[in-house]
Amino acid sequence: MKKILFPTDFSEVANNAFVHALGLAKLIQGELILLHTYELPIIDNQFAPQNYKEVFDSLELANFDRFKDEIPKLRAIALEHNLEHIKMSHLLMDGDLIYNVKEIIKNDEIDFVVMGTSGASGWKEMFLGTNTGEAIANLSVPVLSIPESAKYNKIETIGFTTRFREKDKEALSNVIKIAKSAGAMVKCLYVETKASDNTVATYKDWEEHFKDKPVQFFIVPSEKVNETIEEFITHQNIDVLAMLTYKRNFFQWLFTTSFTEKMSYHCNIPILALHE
Image (cartoon, rainbow, N blue to C red; front, top):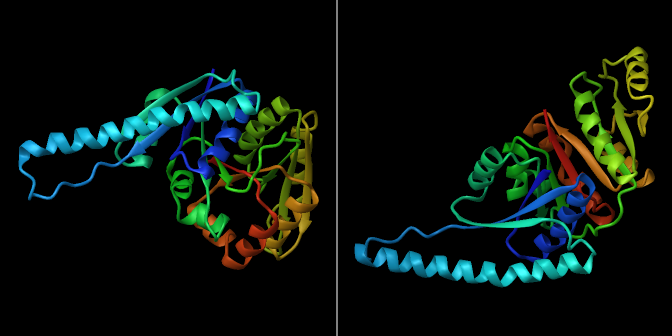
């Protein structure tokens, strides 16, 4: 059974992402591992050493009580969306979120991470400044990030951006597996700029390689990569956008302020970040 790690702070943003995590678990016949982390403070030396344990015990108990109170609320959300049958387990850990997530991925063989994201700057903040951005940049497994206004719906169309590199084929194959589980179509986009070095033979090779799969290819000549991706998402009714994280600076280039501001008004879809 596939394993999905879902870090949560029990906020509205996280609860919205929780529904998407349940939906992914249903698609891939997986189980959900809920993680809540907290950081114990650095105790000033004005405290006598014998007081340390009392302070830490008190903080840990408070976090445990909150964790215990929130779990039934999450189960109620699952029931509301008819996803209560999804297998779930729970982890409460102290320490840095990203460090703990990495350790769990390594020790529990996690297949996906799902995280909610928020912020006025939308996607730019998601990729460059939040815990989700850190996860996407640093984790070894695919990360599904859910904008706060992305409502859970049946996935009918998955977008995939590519550079038509040979190593992209494996990533596209993995996206197609998810699409098949959802009964969805994959629409693969390549923005062909003047600097593009791909050939017609490359395009035909990809079409032949995936000819029996639920995938369509769109080669769009344009020097405006950002705007082209935006129009592709809108006009092709993309429900989830899958992207390879070539390098972190790719996202710094892609999610410029002007692009983000436009996207935040009318495009609030989950992003599936796949690693090379």
